Image (cartoon, rainbow, N blue to C red; front, top):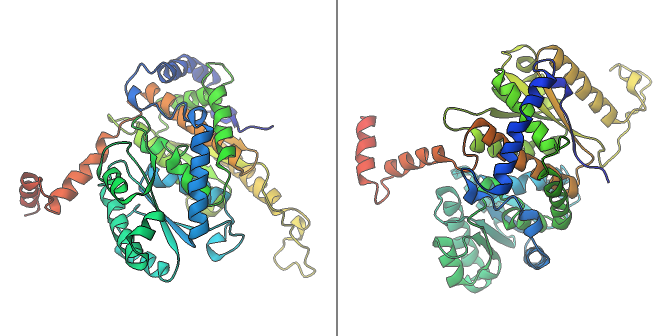
Amino acid sequence: MQNIDLDIKHVYGTVSEAAVDALMPEAKAGLAHLVNADAAGNDFLGWLDLPSRTDEALTSDIEAAARSLRENCDVVVSIGIGGSYLGAKAVIESLSNAFSAYGADAKGPVMLFAGQNIGEDYLNELMAYLEGKRFGIIVISKSGTTTEPAIAFRLLKARLEAEIGKAEAAKRIVAITDAKRGALRQLATEEGYKTFVIEDSVGGRFSVLSPVGLLPIAVAGFDIRALLDGARHMQEKLQQPTEENIALRYASARNALYRDGKKIEILVNYNPKLHYFGEWWKQLYGESEGKDGKGIFPAAVDNSTDLHSMGQWIQDGERSIFETVLSVENPDKTVVIPSDEANLDGLNYIAGKRVDEVNKMAELGTRIAHVDGGVPNMRITIPALEERYLGELIYFFEIACGISGYMLGVNPFNQPGVEAYKKNMFALLAKPGYEKETEAIKSRLG
């Protein structure tokens, strides 16, 4: 069985192999902090052994809930924001037919997402789309009061109850929330919703391998057991402080580059299905590392598309960047480029080749050009876009993130800066309890 793999040799033109190796003891210390739960944020380490703790009973329960929604719904709307949305979206998009939204190779109900924005047009158009369709809801929130998902749930819950009545609506709503407290837990208990628990020790951006991600992924028709198997395999490998540990090598390389002045990491893919994986990765690393005036800025591009937009900046812009390339070894489908007698487009030199061979040469050519242009480059090889390998990739990035955060000297598991906009928004909306803040912010606005 193949596994995901990491190649860091193309960072050595910028930082030496010795410089990367010199950081391995720091990386191993970071890993020890995770395993021993003896550093800042140690009350948010429930994700670390989540793959091995997700037992048969919970897996079967998630599959049964997914089966009920699949059998009774044409559309399922998953409501959540941040990690309560991005992880599931990343896996579903990676595994789905690119045109499944148009009915191609549909594996079950249409999976939609809400509560990840406050777009009035978005919500209006979602409600219009649901007209005449059997729909269900997965609502994900520890508190039940986070503004964006709470608005979406209020609207969709009212719509569902108006269409089929409260009793029937309760059968099509699944709540993933706190075990004992919060507005959503209270409502779920009162209405009799099926529920799953978000553990206090599992933060949102680390929750994709919990019911938060597993239920929407299962509803979409994908194999959560294989996803968990891949994550378990990585859990066993990456908690060992060996020189071959790819999470330790990745964390060491990116921190060596950061200390050398490379402040921006660009996650690059050459498969459009990985777009939302980049979005999930950006939240994971941005929210974990960006604090105390520190942190590598996470960005993402979709190549070869973005070579015709961002490619110029990456090739010739400020040399403050490095790249981590996600390379899918084996595509699922085969398309061969035909020969054309007129050859007006000049493509007969690649006639008979698979499209993926051309894509791989675009990837290799770009990596060589960027390295020559002063952009250090790491490459993660994924054998195929399958559940097992995505489970491996998710766990790899999660544990490397914790290690890297400790190497930066920050708490990787809090997010103090996230609250600033909320306080201002509540003050501007005159939320009860924010009277002083409302008065203060209005005075600033004149």
